[in-house]
Image 1 (cartoon, rainbow, N blue to C red):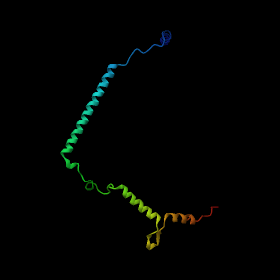
Image 2: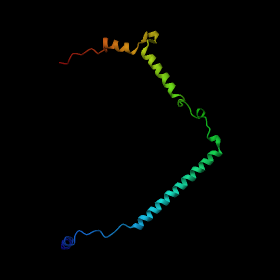
Image 3: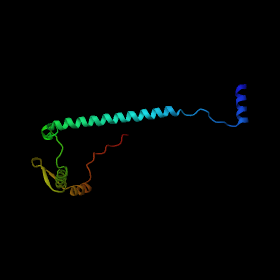
Image 4: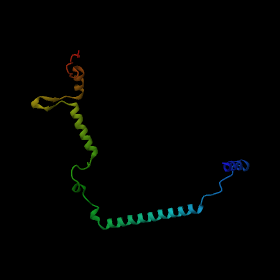
Length: 135
């Protein structure tokens, strides 16, 4: 305890002082050099691997030209998604806005959505009969 008090008194008398140990610049320099060397070697290996694959690809041109319709089973990706979506939307709009038969044997028909909304607003939804409250 007396040693701590003496150290504290010395700091008060001599001022706050500073840290005398510095950063080891040589260690940081070696680390930076090794880091740059590893990055350079990695980039060199990647470029070499890229060149290898490019030359092996150009040596075998049949592997590049593959017909995807012969390779992949159904369902396949759409070749013309824009026009296909337009035709689907037109079919949906036609079903929503026209009259038509759903099942002629059962006399089920399809009505336009606007008419169906108006009919539902006029008649309301079917409800269950209310039970009398338990006594």
